[in-house]
Image 1 (cartoon, rainbow over the protein chains, first blue to last red):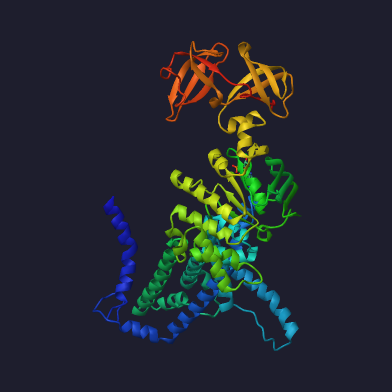
Image 2: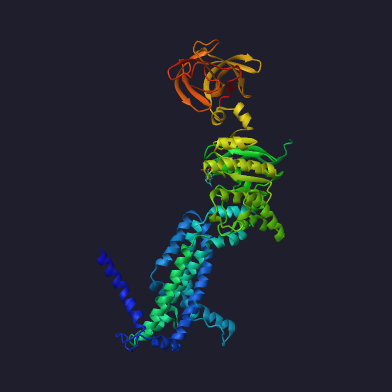
Length: 268
Length: 364
Ligand SMILES: Nc1ncnc2c1ncn2[C@@H]1O[C@H](COP(=O)(O)OP(=O)(O)O)[C@@H](O)[C@H]1O
Ligand SMILES: [Mg+2]
């Protein structure tokens, strides 16, 4: 049994370990380790395409995570007030949003966005004349929208769990001591759910930063880091890809571990 | 003392769906008194308290505070404060910020120095002066309870509401806290309304006790009134212990009701207000009103046999039986214990009671 478990773990982690190891490779072949060196890190980070892709990914991830956190938190708080059947219905919707495969979300979002753009662009054109300054199209905006929508469901689930674990009598005590509802929310509810909000943000960020499938459909001409890796891998696995893989892995792990730590912290 | 009314329930009923938690409550709460709602779990005590705090709105009737109808007024606009059963202290604030919370909600804002001074005084009153910077989870249960108390009294509420505040404390601590709470109330002169299911707690601290039974008020009165003049069997049974004897009213002797019990036993009973002068009545006879003498002693009495004898230290409790009376409990002080040693199980004794010891209760 132990051996079996060991085998499973090896199978899971050896490829990842190999990528990390080979990112420090001194040689120029991706499959042959010929000494330890940081030279590929230097080269990768000097590559303007990589730098641009990182910038795009980072901008999209931060913006979409911020939006998802803001609206997800508000939605979670609002859902607290919904009871009975309707509540079940909303809960189901949220869980479905998380479980739908990325490819379906990617295609669905693409179709939805393209349809909206095709309807709106002629309207905008008639509104602003021939030099229409606002041309809707796929790009950072659509990436942010798609990622934001999907990760909002994650934030709702995390914040909801925290809200449900919160002692209701704290809000009653706050009201009893003279705080109107909005002030109770700011002074009591927000501090209580802050760890969950932060964890939700980090998870949303990680999801967006790593995502390839949804981005592939809605990115338009933008290149995120995963899209860059995908396109360059067609020219074979280079040490550069190992470096990017290792960096993305490190960033994601850092973010996920921080989220875990924040969530585990006691409620004060 | 002039009984000035600070709050009032007028015909208040509260329903939760099909459940009627409180029904037809009529009650005036007096300025400066210590009033307790007493009753078993589920009898509507908390509901009554929460209607005063504003967390629940009455389905029918009016709630008045300081002469104004407050139906529909939300909790944050009511001049009352509550000590919650689990304290509900804010875990992300230290002790001083918890206590200052209510003062910080005032508009226009109070001066910082005023708030600090009031907080210090409140903490001093509950003997927590050195604890301002402590985190809540660093405090013991008893200390948390005192923080909750300080957080409420610092606002100088018209009424302080307490929902089973001692339930989470161990027995020794609870007793100390009862005394502390009572003296705090005297010192502050604030009206306290306490909810408890512990009759000893209610009787020892309260000026008046409101006994509740299935959502209704069974009786309101001072602890002495409730003990000496219970108006119905429920109260007589709930406050202290009593022997209940079915009897038939046979006449009156001035204020007293003459009744005949089983086996022709004669009782001259005090009569509760609503008792009729004839027909069947239930007599309540407190165990300590019963005299126990050795068999064959001089004087009248009813002969009974000891079925159990329980030593209680100061007192001895006898369970007695005769052909007429199935089961009678008598509690006799040890100092006046029966001459020639205490009778053991199986021994015959002579049992008697003075006129007016028994109380005739209304049928309920
Ligand atoms: N929010 C509520 N919803 C439904 N039923 C309630 C609610 N609060 C209290 N009740 C019911 O009302 C009755 C009285 O409750 P409560 O006032 O809490 O009693 P007590 O404090 O004397 O134990 C109980 O039967 C309880 O189940
Ligand atoms: Mg209760």
